[in-house]
Length: 89
Image (cartoon, rainbow, N blue to C red; front, side):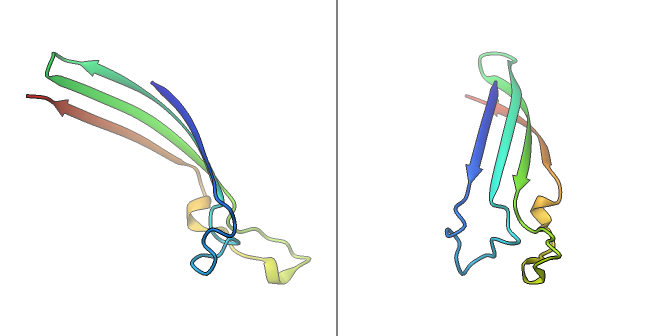
C-alpha cells in the first residue's frame, strides 16, 4: 500500500483558540506499508508514515512584534512505524 495526503488549515479556523504565528498551518504526509495474510484468519500489517509540518514560528528581526519561537510540533518532521495484527474468528 502507498498513500500521500496533505492538510492545509485556514488561519481563521482556530481564531481565539490558537496562535497561527506559533501553530502548524499545514502538514504533508506519505505512507507505505505491507499486508501479510498468515492464514485465512490472521493478518499482519506494517506501515511507515512520514509527516512534514509547515508554519508556526519564525524570526523577522525587522518586525519584532511578529517574532515568535517555532512551535514544538514544527521543529522537526514526524516518522512513525505502525504494526498491527488482526485475528478473525
